[in-house]
Image (tube, rainbow, N blue to C red; front, side, top):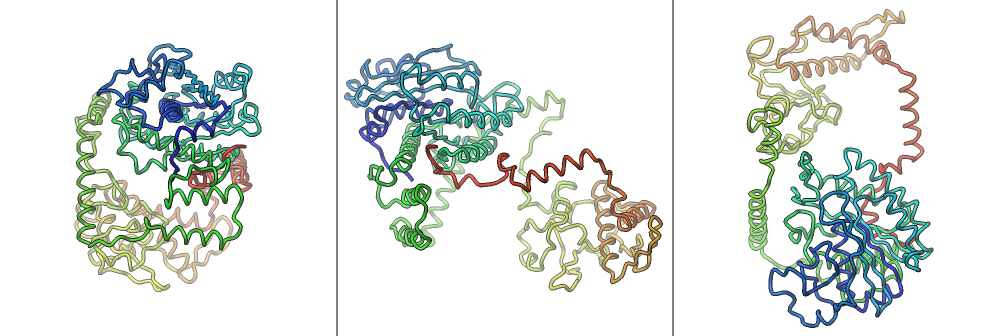
Length: 596
């Protein structure tokens, strides 16, 4: 997915340029690894990449080494006092929004300046002034901006933080043309995925402990919005969230930061993106060959920069890539494959079990139960509800069949495997047949012929666990709709409002009305635990008759809301909702467009 870069490659790429790196602690790691790689090809030690607010980087003599320190004596000769960065300002180590950490590094060999700025929001007045004044203060324009800002925006700026993040990001896009030269580059990195439970001081705020569990979902929303806004503005997006999916074993225990190897991978991904945008495939170092992921990136980059010559050319290239050795199936017995799968599963299970012992979920749950004065364990769930794997013995209300009302009618093929609960087992309630021989069944319409599948017991959704004596009609199954409640019959109904005769011909409207009646009866039973009385059913029938004869009778027409809804509809129809992230997909911008 990326090439491998050496110090001379980085130096030539950014020679005589000013590179600006903006973001939180993750971007500080990007900054440090880039500076390290510019001088030496080794992997930066974790003690150095994890430090913050040190006076100079890398100061090898003042590092709190956990081991024996760097074994290569060449490093001390490279990173002399003249070849380190400078911490320009500090307010001390804090975990609040006032934390700052501006750092400046200058490389004499390549006349290269790399500036890092810790930010807690994607756009502020201070950041605007900094970008606008950079050229005058440093006597050179900004050549490249590499940026990410997500977790702080979503977690540390109140309930409107996510909405303001999108607004601020658009403000930043409007500012960039005024601070970048015509050949300047802006590259946005999507936020890498966090763990199921994060344990970071900066994100763990008293009273907001839930964010330790919801941040990973916020990251997805933020990445989607950012990729859309930035790519529409014509700048580059590197989807680090996607590209680190298989590297989560390299994530630190806090659930946010990553080890040194992951940071080097991110650096190489960024440099690959810049090389492909600037010079195409010829700009890559070429140290990685016959790599399917990298070859696909090259192909996408070529199409983005030059456009595809023709569909056959692309197809030929894809066919060529499919012949790479890595994609050829290796010979192995089924037994060996199953053993590998089992070993991997057991290893992952042991890791998950170990992490669960370190979780603070129970601590947060107990605190919430105490504050809300709830009985112990009332907020805990042993098994997460999942619509695709429901238990037939689930409690009433959580597993009712009304979840998929209005969905497609079930087909007979769905009932071939009794061990599988398909999502479509949530049968629409208007398919219920109360005229049962003892089991609640479902009318299955196959090929236009309606048939009652009474020989099929529909467990799961319909077995809601209610005892039969809760029925208003005593023990036993639900009564037939016709004899118990009185169904709509094919006859003439006079509309008193219009003075017209409504003829329910061909059973079509009668069936529709009976379906509505069945649905209302079922919903009533689901909500109350027993069937409605005959008087209540007659009231339901009267309401259904009126709704059929005069569909607009029950509508509360409001001119203001009508105009508001029409405006929203017109905006959506004309495509204006594109700015609100309702269209497009992030994968299309994983290696996005660079420059302007």
